[in-house]
Image 1 (cartoon, rainbow, N blue to C red):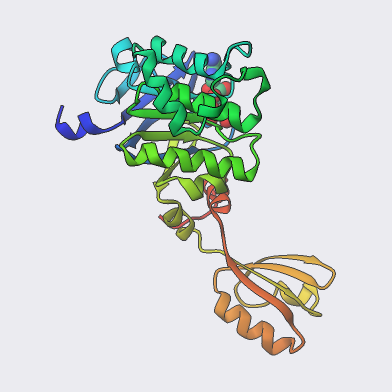
Image 2 (cartoon, rainbow, N blue to C red):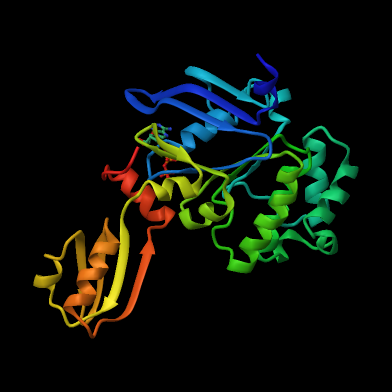
Length: 303
Ligand SMILES: Nc1ncnc2c1ncn2[C@@H]1O[C@H](COP(=O)(O)OP(=O)(O)OP(=O)(O)O)[C@@H](O)[C@H]1O
């Protein structure tokens, strides 16, 4: 093992996993570097949970190599380098916030004194004496994050971490996490909130049918999708619009049209020449959501 593998938060090579005859993962590679945030995306049944459960040692390894902070994730000593925030992972609501976080520190083999600084870091100090039952959704999520961070993990695994949170609470969650990432914690997040992951992840890995379909920065994945959307108000009829050069699809609602095209310049020239009264013209690129949809639906996407 070289020092690079040791300093990586997570390294997965050629992981395959079957449930009986069902091959859920088929030769997957996945890396999370120190301080990096990687979003794992893909449709239902793609294999995300299976991959995460292998990475965090909940499932036994069948094929391939899996290193969590350079160690075997099935070993208890390695798992001490791991923090997990999961929807299903609750905490006793009769306890106070400070007790919950101190308890998590003790279970992770640390002194309960580490709880204080973590509570301060996550802006929970004022809530330390409050019972968990009385917390808002955003506060609860920060308590979960505090529990996951007490042992200073090398890898933090987040499963749909911001579901149910409003926009300010989501921002706060990611802002607080950014400080830990700056100190070297790697983050692996599984989410169906694709546009949110585009905003927070350094890299995106798209999984489908147990295989990695694509990996890259959110910008690079979007850049692989050639379609642009042109919206406008026009008197041109659908029959005419579908025949314009470069048009891939037409969506019409009264005078409002939405066209997709691979050559927006050509299309715009013809549109403006044919309808001098054209108004409310906008040209937009696709977002990460469209790029992931195109990838997982087997649409033609640049390599
Ligand atoms: N315990 C299990 N026993 C049998 N098959 C399973 C088990 N867990 C998952 N599978 C199958 O493995 C495949 C991958 O499932 P997995 O839960 O890893 O996907 P996922 O990407 O997490 O999906 P979702 O987004 O719906 O949670 C699916 O075909 C699923 O039916």
